[in-house]
Image (cartoon, rainbow, N blue to C red; front, side, top):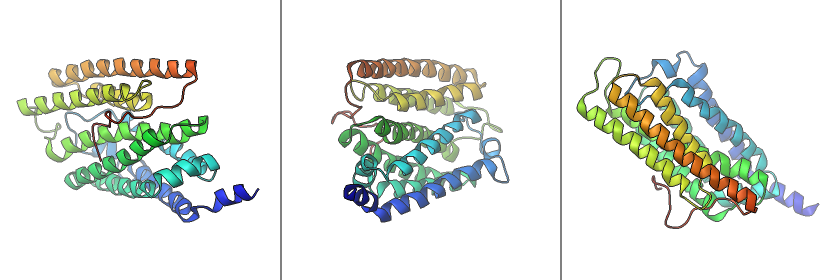
Length: 275
């Protein structure tokens, strides 16, 4: 019993802060849906804007992170979340809340800068979790590795989307010029290459992160009907991203079949967007 009491009180300040910033983070995203305007339809439309259903991934991330917040009060969770991730989690939540509110208010250039900050914060956590805290239980997998894999993949997408909103043309009023098509193609290529990097980040790959990228590319394909070059380019890279999802799924299946440990990043295979 004393050990359980110690685990409950150790790092109590950080645990309380994590709870507070979680609801700040959740509230900032709820505002974009329940606010006075429907941001997913009234925001700037670019040539890489995905279908609104792409943003449903936030709901899954919120749900999983709620499990993370609860899990920090248990011995296994305390070791990873409090001792490992430490104050990076509240920093991430605050940066994300600022980013979402700037984005919802259409301050796209400043939002892009904060998207980079969010990506950097997520990358720090992602690397710490994958490199130094292999999952020891199903709870580690579900409440630590899974949410931050999804989060990392999704924030990579957000950096691209916000960059086009900040510096790209408005698709509602301007046709896509040659440079818009080139940069859209390069953006799709970057996202697909990132999905491949996740798939080869270890012997098992990182399935959730690859899925986040593939999900986004399919959402972009569904939204972007014109011009045809962007439409079919998005489809081509969405299909390619599924190849890496399948590769990672096979790796996860082999891991489960052989009863091996969790996913960890090799030293030479750090994420594409580095801290």
